[in-house]
Amino acid sequence: MSVRKLMYVLTVVMTMISCKGKKNNNEFTVSGNIENAKEQKVYLEQLFFSTQDIKMVDSGKITNGQFKLKGIADEEGLYVIRLEKNQAAYFLVNDINEIKLNADVNKLSLEGFSVNTPVNLSLKTFMSQVEKKGTALQIKFKDLDSLKNANDQKQFEIESLKMDSLQQDFIDYASQFADTTTSPVLALYSLGYLKNYDMSPFM
Image (tube, rainbow, N blue to C red):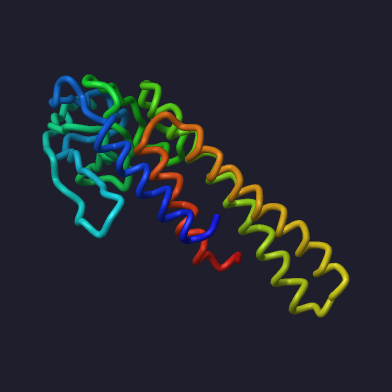
């Protein structure tokens, strides 16, 4: 996807958010249980697809693993639940008014948390696939680097073709996801990966 086409699609998606992202009730809550989390502050922050700084939306306290936070939004947005004393951070979209999150601070992988709403399940699937495909690219990049240093040109060319295939698979997946998702926020999120990918060391 060219940069010009990417910027055009980003503009279209931003228009979709403005026109179609409105919610009947502007207030939403995020509550749930975070296992193995000691009593501490918990924050709800909004992320933006621009240079705008992260916005603090609400803060509270985890007690016996339980928490509840509130926000007000006219449209869907991308948010993160962040803990005061742990590295864990949980991304979510406010696609419904009452969002339930379950997590375990001892499990920092994507499998360590769940937000059971349609858009958030789709977001988790996308993040899981990107992580998988990104790992494959990193491994292949290291293989190519080793072959280059070993001056094995024939094998280097073979592995380069495999690398090209992995790159295209990554791009095709993110592009198709952006084209088919019904969530403007997820479209922007996936297109962001493509934009960043243009500056990737793999290219």
